[in-house]
Every structure is written in C-alpha cells, then in structure tokens.
Image (cartoon, rainbow, N blue to C red):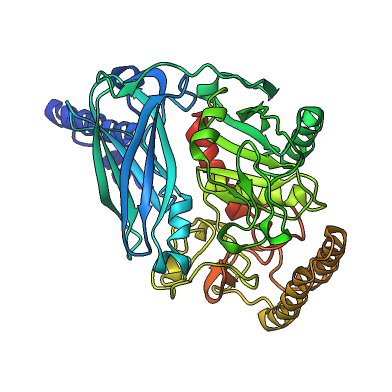
Length: 493
C-alpha cells in the first residue's frame, strides 16, 4: 500500500451528525421490519381469548358439486391445550381452512387447516348420485368478544376461497360455557409439560370390553413406543403428552361389513368406509368429541380392537388403526403421518374408491409435487447437486411387479382368507420390494421420483422408499420428517 493510498484510507471525510442519524434510523427501521416479520404469527392470547376451548359442532352436507353448513351447537370443550403463541396457521395444509376474526378490530386472531370425511366423500361416485350429511367440529380458544368464523376451501388453483361464514357471540344463550362432566376413566401415558407447550394426543379405544382395558393400555404402550423409535418423534419425544380415555364396549371388536360381521361399538368405528375393505372410520362425531374432551388434546388416535388389517388417517380429524395386526406398528405410524402433518399416500398401485382428477396444479401436500416448476421444487434444499430432477428409479420393473401383487391381493381378499394368510402375503411383498429398491441408484437420496398418491404418472414423491410409500420400513423420509417437525413446532413454540 503506498503512502498516498495509506493516507487516503486513514483520512476519510468525517460523517456528519445528520448522516449518522439517518444511518441509525435505517438500522432501527430494518430491525423493526425483521422483528415484525418474525412476530406476524404471534398475537397476545389474553387480549382476545380465555384459557378455554370453544367447540362448534356443525352439519356438513351436499354432493360432489355442492356443499352447505348448519350449526348444531357451540359449547365448551375444556381448557385450551394448544399453543398460546402460534395462533395463526401458516403451514398451508389441508383442503379446508377456517379463520376467526375479532369483530371489534377486524383482525384475524386464529386459524387452522383441516380435512374432513365429507371432503373425501365428495370424491367418490356415490356423491354424484346422492346427497350426504356428516357431523363435524372445529375447535379454537374461547373468544372474549364476538367473532366471525370464515370457512374456506381450496379452488381449482389450490387457493383458499371463502365458502361459508357465521357470527359467534359467547355472551348469547345459544352458546353453552358449561364444561362436560365426563363419565369415562382417563389414563396418562406420557406427560412432559404444560398442555399449551406440548403437542397433546388423546388415544381412544373402540371394541375393547371392560375386561380388555389392560390390553388397551398395553396396545397404547406398544404402538406409541414403536412411534417414538422413529424420527422425528424419537428426537422430539419430550414435546409430546399422551393421554387415553376408556370407553368399554359390550362385546369385543367393531363393525366389519365385508366379512359379514356387524356390531355397534361405543365409537361406531367401522371397516368398509367408502366400500374399501381396509378403510376404518367412525361417523358418530358428537360422541367421539364428547369422549375426547375428558382430557386436553390437539390430535386424536382411535385404536381398534381387531386383527383385520386396516385403519385410516384424516388431517386434523383423527387416525385409526387395527391394534392386533402384524403390521399394526406400520399402520399406526403411517396414519399419524396423514393425521398430524397432512402427508399424502405415496403409493399408487392399490385400488381406491376416489375418482382422481388429472394433475393440473401443484398439490398442497408437503410430500408431493407435480414438477410444473422443477427449478423451485418445494423440498429443493434437501436435494444434492448431483441428483437429477426428475429422478430415475427403475419404475417400469417396479410397476410390473406391483400390478401382479395387487391382482394376487385382490384375489386373496375376495376369497376371505384369514389374516394370517394376508400377513404372509405382505411379508413376501415386503421382502421383494425391499430388495428391489435397495439396488436402485438414487435410493437414500432426496429427489423427485415419479409415481405417487394413486397416480402412476404426473405426481412425484421425494424418496424411492418411505413409510408413506411401502410397508418396507417404518421410517419417514427427510421431506416427511421436515413436514412433521413444522407441525410439532406449531403446537410447542
């Protein structure tokens, strides 16, 4: 450095006082912008809500092209168990979304995405011919003042648009603030802290008699421990509380129409939902919600006291699982992926009742993509530079074997073979698929592999294998783990 350069460096023109003020103001302004952007999802809970849960029960009715809402009742559902910090839902999950507006200020003070049985029913052929009515509930903190509830649904562009609204005033006689006095026995399996700082799961049981309550407890322990052996649940175990409510049945088991076995259990769980033999749902929403309200909860699981393979999972409604099947641990974890994080099924060869539209828009599910804009892949940060998009994976060979497998499966089911025979069939399928996928070039890497969500072509999943794709292993891929972590954060921050 020359002397001249040196002197020029050390003898700059002094900064004026006004310039200093401008710089300080700019720094302050930028810091406020950053702070405000970080706090946009944070409201003062006490300014708008009581520490209490409001539940609105309503009827959701319509057909494949039309839908309507009618309020059933508005009542207390016990203390508020959700986060008091993250009140606005920014995860953009679910086909439905509801917002609570404070009437005095016009400000959105609570929101959540969700899915429903009605929403699924709209996609099956029956909805084209008949109207259906389903009982549903939404829950939110108890407002201090009158509010407006706005219900939204995704349109053909996957954007949320308003489809219904109603006014709610807790001071009116139509709203019942009385807490229910539960007649059911409760049990705490895991408690790691205050409900408003943890993700709370309530586990119900259907088809368990009074003499089988010890089995119900053991089923809970066995299945939840399998869950917490897998990531991200293993790492985040301390973020969960798990409680159970006992609902003794008069006889063991639940309704199984495909097998000609008909029962009326306390929670009305039934296989054969949407005429799918393995799909098990419960339609008595009012009873289920009243039972669940015995404990604080954010998410709900129903254990079915059956061996028959089956279960179900609907985002932010509940998940179900047959407790005694050889693959119950897989079903338990897989269905929680649907219920907790809105993860889509990644398999596409199994038969389903839904009428599937052509892929014309990017899916909202966090583990699916249509690759319309592959340069901005939603999980781009997890893809290594040397992984091509889309990513090859021996699809033709896999599909050929999958077609034969599904033919054999349907044949066995039509013959009403025992669950033991079906479990051996699934074992062989697992062995063959695991061996095939292990040899693929990009196995173990995040990419975009064609074939997902009942579509052989046009939709892509992030991994060659994941619990959302096969029964080969119980682990979630990195993309699914990231999605689950975001939901856990929403309830624990």
